[in-house]
Amino acid sequence: MQKQNDMLLNEQKIKNDFQQALLQTQLEIQEQTLKTISEEIHDNIGQALSLAKLKLNTIDITKQEQLIEKITDSKNLVSKAIQDLRDLSRSLNTDNIAAMGLIRAVEYELELFRKSGFATDLRISGTITRMEPQRELIIFRIVQEALTNIIKHAEAGTITVTAVYNTDALELQVQDDGKGIAVMLDINKEESSNKSLGLRNMHNRAKMVGATFSMESVSGNGTVIKLSIPFNNV
Picture 1: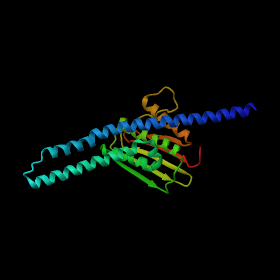
Picture 2: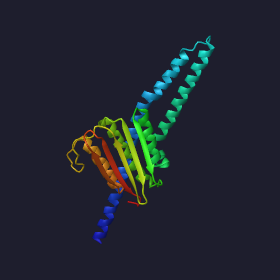
Picture 3: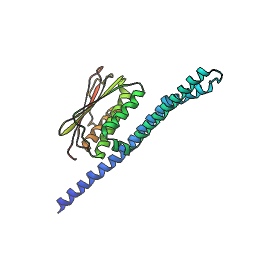
Picture 4: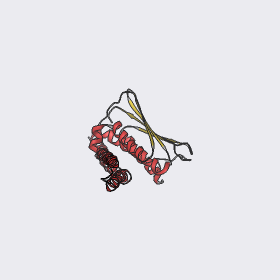
């Protein structure tokens, strides 16, 4: 009887830990997205609207040909700002991430990186298979954190995300062409730098959804983050 109670308590603890991790993941995704949105509004949307305002302020109604050109340019700039805002609103809500699916959410994330000056590439092979929304949300956060690490540490110009859908698992990897790291970090050590802390967070989240996590990095030759996610439920 005691053994059965212990098993039930352990199962409940696992469920509680997963729910807490899921809530933390949702908050982190929103925090990171808000930061990205702030930068996007400042660097792109704000710039487009400022240019539109400048063109409208310099209109000379006596110059018909210039008038038409400046009004057309202003309309195009405002349309671009509206589309960028729509794209940002889609990426803000974690419910939207669950609705659009993992791959589309990653695609949106890469679009934001591309607007920030990175060359990005999303490669997909096999038939896309949806998983439980909660699992996809946590996997997306791992990818998002890997991309954030590239911005902070890699000094990279190109980011490549590869998704290979096999019959029983998704093989996912995030690769950059940055400086890499000279020494492999021990993600299981408690005492570690901020870099290895981020890796450990990704590793722990991967275990939570039944995935395996690994990193390959060589100084001067970039870094590859790899995830292998079985389709069976955890």
